[in-house]
Length: 286
Image (cartoon, rainbow, N blue to C red; front, side):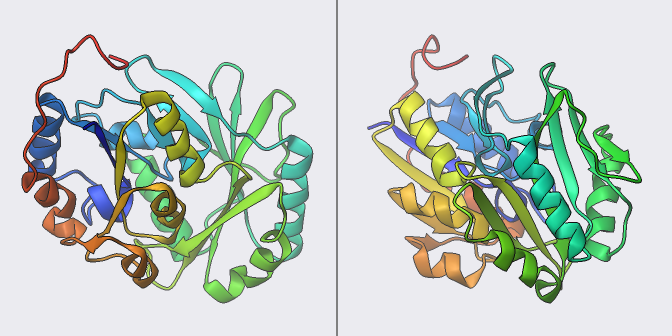
């Protein structure tokens, strides 16, 4: 039986330092080397996900930005894209700014050049996010006075960070729109703050995993997650495992609860399973 294992990154496969532990690297690579099917589904773009995953021998497509993209890291090719039209994006940006929020606007052009436009750093969540990304060499950030969308760029996501109370009006304003998806959840790196990421209606981990299912034709899907944006992925999986550090709602929906991300929970789970028989290396996307 071909079982596809799919893991979230932050709070799940990554430890509290936003890195893969040595145990996780050894275990996942051994699993893949023995013929296991392993992928990730993350809120990160490849610019940041690729850096933290560079030591994994990933051979299958991955889900990025909560389903905005399905990306083949072997061929370095975007297989699926779910982008906002710029008129809708401007409507969201203007609505959030009227509510006193400071959006981060993520764009891409036809040459696959990615940028993040923002007006500054105004709270601890924004500071943690921007500082960490810049420290790792992320070159996407553009500090601007006005959030104008260049005509040759498309918007992938609009993200605001604040307290749950600060984001409540925006969630109410855009949460019911059928042309949008609102991903809301706590910032695991800045306690007391939340993120509200607004994307195309089809940009969910459920839709991204459905695309992986279509492309790879597994018999079963097993997934691992910790935060609210993983709930759509849980809906489509045959088995779903919440981390010990997961949000209570994920634990309620989960097939089981694993050790925490700090305790290498995904790796420890894989170690309990007999590795599959080696596959013909000519198969897949390698």
